Image (cartoon, rainbow, N blue to C red; front, side, top):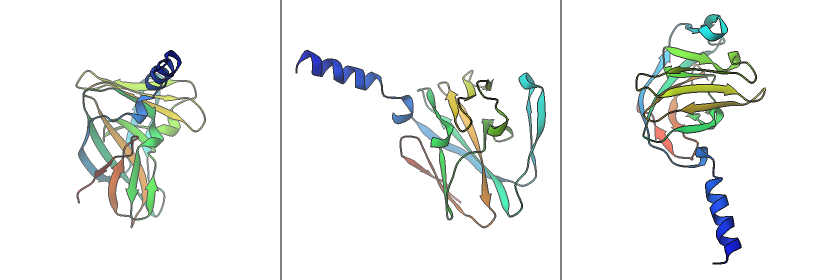
Length: 167
């Protein structure tokens, strides 16, 4: 292999974003959120609640991660339903501690320290993108808004793998 080919291979390998690499993940909880879900972001002095739109419902999926940290666009975690797909509208360390993505200010980071001492951070990088960073052995709960009649099938991870959600 020539020096140029080797150098190019190394650059391409090191340049792979963490979002395209596989990481350990296991669904630990999934549930419908029956009422409004309260939230609080102390660093922004902001509190409120997330409610489903008429004809819709809130659904939370919690995933335990392995030893590898992750950093990716949160929209790469996709819920597969009988109606198609759904992107997260919120995330947090547990299903009852969710930060609505539309409340993360542009250029700002909000997050929490998880019980495993991993850090979960959400950073708005543009009007449409929010980056999710979670340290090793962290957990992340995603909040989705689904049509009331939709059935949940699986969570697609950024690397394309699907974690089946048992009913």
